[in-house]
Image (cartoon, rainbow, N blue to C red; front, side):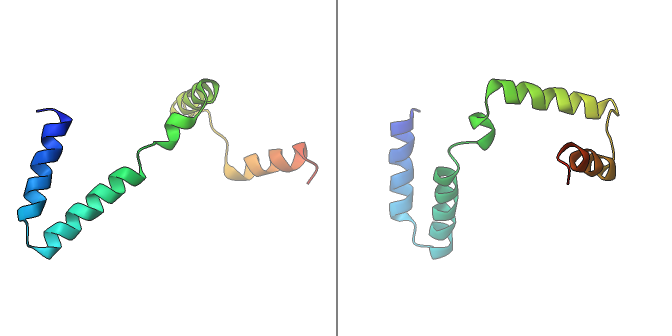
Length: 80
């Protein structure tokens, strides 16, 4: 079944449906699908994706610092 056939079948099912809660549920599902067509991760550059993957690998290896230490490094770097 291709997309056109599936849409036609769905349209017929919706036309026959009289249960308001079912129709509202279908509307919510379809509204959410159309609102989230783009995954924010797909908009990241390849270099940023590579950096994030490297960071995740480091964290998995236990190469992390505490929040307090990270904040101190930021303060020192930017003279805050």
